[in-house]
Image (tube, rainbow, N blue to C red; front, side):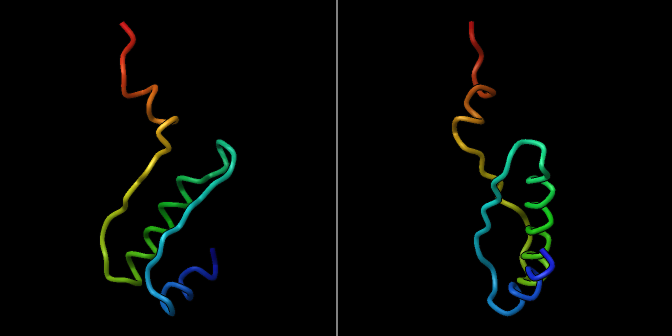
Length: 63
């Protein structure tokens, strides 16, 4: 993470994929990466994508 601001300043924006076990800080890491991208690229916002299998059970109700 220490090198990310320098890489973004040098190369511009990109796509980051964060994977690890549950409870290891992926969300916090992703938000910090988004902050760095936004700060160095003059952008705003975050696109938060979830795997369909993780989101699907929460989007429907069983009757």
